[in-house]
Length: 101
Image (cartoon, rainbow, N blue to C red):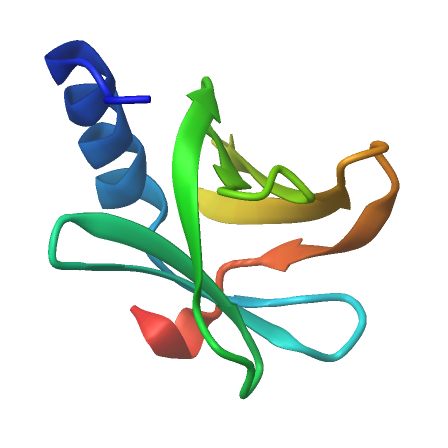
């Protein structure tokens, strides 16, 4: 499925706000990055997984098996991410790493 221009703009806006590294509550680190116009999520030393915008502030893997949901704590302000399986089970969550910015 080809993304519309609006979807591309929305994805770019979400990436701009939430790019970087997150310290997950399971001890891993998740990195949200972009290369050659594509978006990726990398957990620890694993291979990057391509993700696409699927809802407001949410990217999902191409396979649809995992999703990244981003949120902003406006009081801090600090970004958070939650990594979920396709059945909604939370894999891990955590705040943006202060060392990454």
